[in-house]
Image: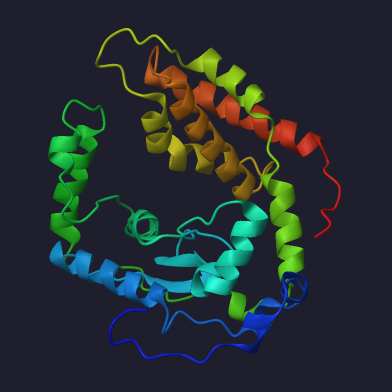
Length: 288
């Protein structure tokens, strides 16, 4: 618990078994950010923005997943991060908790704040030193200059709306995890590895060749938006496929070969093929 934060009484559902907890509706949990460690993290994010002279303060709410919706300058935070009992349930069912420790939580908050601000600056980071020689260096310089120009201005879009707010969600946790587990069962790694090796290489042409995982992270938002415009795949599925590609690219130590112009088209094909492979499996209902 953060220093100076008032204690909140333990909810009755905290003592329920996993099976009983899964039967509850989201709205029955009565979750809130106030009084939790999430509040501390959000306040830290605001302080970091202030240190950079940025006036913008993205509002936050609890949803089923991490996201920053188009047109709304705010951040949706997964509901399970609002309580340790829900974190425990998420870890048991999904094997990981995205944002489950303080450093990871702050990294995601900064990332989503970048989407909300339509930029990606990490306050006070030594990015000039870390990114020297990277193709993205010029872009980061531009974003840094842009942040200085617009930082003190009042945001043009001040919509404080929320999307998929769990405090109003009548679906049960069981339904949520059945759907999430079904989406999470992506194609086998070997299939992803085979496609990645057609696009990237394990033998870079030079020491300056960029890492495949870094380029995928840089292109992730653009790729996701372009693929979603087709309407063929859900945002969550595309997000998970891209995350799988980044993880496997790091594990295989892959590098970029050829031009970036060709690469974007190749990656769109890879993501679409993997997503199609997943959709065609038509997984059965998951029993929890």
